[in-house]
Length: 290
Image 1 (cartoon, rainbow, N blue to C red):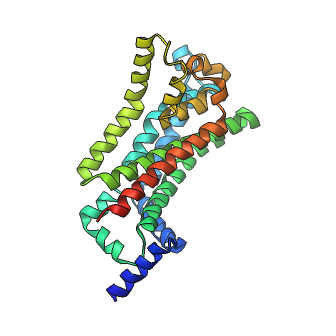
Image 2: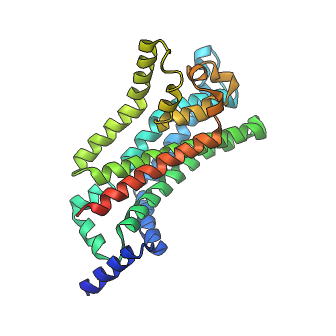
Image 3: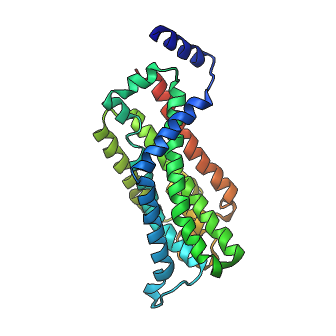
């Protein structure tokens, strides 16, 4: 029986066929595990609470409270989300594969008629569905509350903010799965996830600003936009700040990032690259592992 199952799996790998039912089954299990653990509810409540507080008190430093416009609200939310969402995504996915290996269930899963690609995609899609639900539910509820005062244009801007937030979260979730495949233990994976968050969210921009200061901007004008695109957190910031005229001048990005490269479709495509590339690397490593 084991021989026939293994032979069937090897045949499907050789033929490069993917069984969508297997992927859906794994994704469904991952998703409902997060629902049962109340992870989705907890994250959605956090997003809703922070978004409501920022929408109402975002202008408190100027001596005013209350909703002051969708552009200022999005700018304030961007400053929060850029710290919170990558951390949540990395914590969500860092043990997806290495955890199965430590529990000894990975060998059992691979003995079933399922390929490594199906297992990896199922894990990712299930976690992505949980992250999507919590993000859309949390920020979407705030959008409903604010909808009466922002008009259709404001709703579209806010919808773009939610979409870009989701894309950034999925990019960091892909990085988390890559870490999970590469790591030899959950402790190593968790340390790598925190280090990656610290680098991309806190350190990366400081390094770029340091290079600008050292070179006095003479050698970085053409390279700086490219370096910004090598960080999904910076792409998210550009997507949400560069198109808001009221707040663009408050950010240094307005002076160093060329408007020609601030096209939402271009930046969205680069964000998709950040989603797909770590997944591809994770599969390449997972396929070669024992």
